[in-house]
Length: 202
Image 1 (cartoon, rainbow, N blue to C red):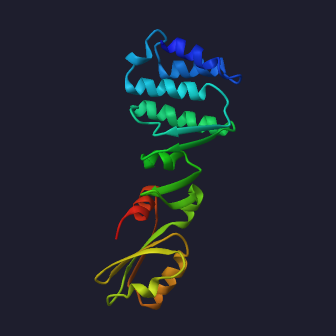
Image 2: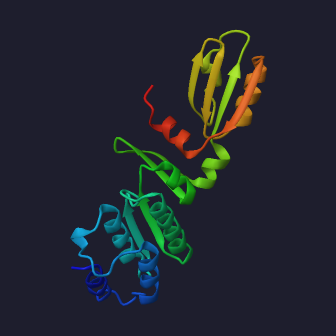
């Protein structure tokens, strides 16, 4: 089929098909109507698939690595399309290894590692709660003294300690002061850093 034939064929299955929306996406993605789908580049086939998904008003869209094969402009168009679709009431569920893209647009994030769910949190919680606390002590600290609620990982090197916490950062700071820490630095973590901490093997 050509792009035009594929659009006509697909639209016949859905009573909620929106011709105007599909035409807008067609122009934005610059897809050639007369080209056969099999002759399109990988990126253009991805754009066509997105057009067919976004050209209607579904309750749920599931996308698997949607930005694969897209150039930077195509990725930007994709992300804008996901946000627009979501703002109009569609739930968009997508899997991706492109963590920066996930962080930009996701409301809720799950992280899988070797088939295990290691994180299930809203992006608001990630931004508000996850912290790395870097500490320096006069003498080498004992990590067990900092195994308190909210602390997920502790790394020590000589007099330095780095604490990864999903909450309760203030309590970690207070504990550090009790042990006469000479330096205390608390930094918020982006999704990439949280992801690496969650899947990193000790």
